Amino acid sequence: MTRFVQVLKDTSRNIGRYPGTALGSILSLTFLFLLFDLFWISSSTFDNWYDGLLDEMQMEVFVDTPVEEIDIPALQQKIGEVEGVSDIEYISKEKAREILTDMLGIDLLVGYDTLNPLPRSFVLGFSSGFVSSENLSAVASEVKRFSGVLEVSYARRWLEKLEQTRSIITNVGMALGLFILLTALISSVNNMRLMTRTRAVGFRQMRLLGA
Image 1 (cartoon, rainbow, N blue to C red):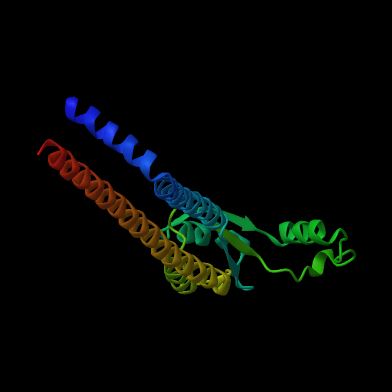
Image 2: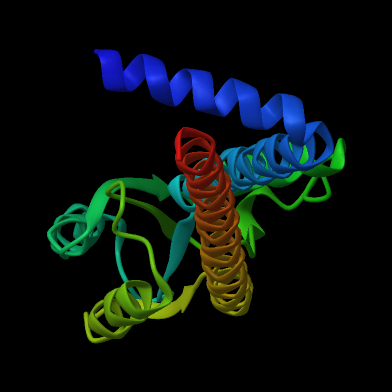
């Protein structure tokens, strides 16, 4: 306890002797830690935004024309058993027409009820944490092998660009975080050396006075 009190006294004395140096050290350390906190918050925010986008990622599997409606449930079951698929919804020609009408605000197929050219499809959702360009590519390859599947569509290029962006941000963030941490450590070490030297000078002066 006595030693701790002595350290506090020496620290206070050194601050009083060198107020500019002490204030500069405190401000620089505060700025560095504040910068690190901002980096940490920004990184967490980006990760949450990135995960939210991936959770909304979907894949559309188009059904070949010759497939009969009676065979749709069997095909749906096979696709739903693919690893990573957590949700599957069948979009009939009528449902596709409703979706198109909602998007455009007008029914373009009025008078063509018996000649609906819109394709049938399945919309796939995926488990949380599963979505990546590699995993979705594997799912697409497997689904394409099923009889009755005409085409598989998803935002492959968009997903690849998003992953590249995240990789760049992560690498830059790690480099910045390490730089901030290293700068803070160097600053702390220099401050400790300065305090040690000041104490050593004080001890020498006390010895000389005692002599």
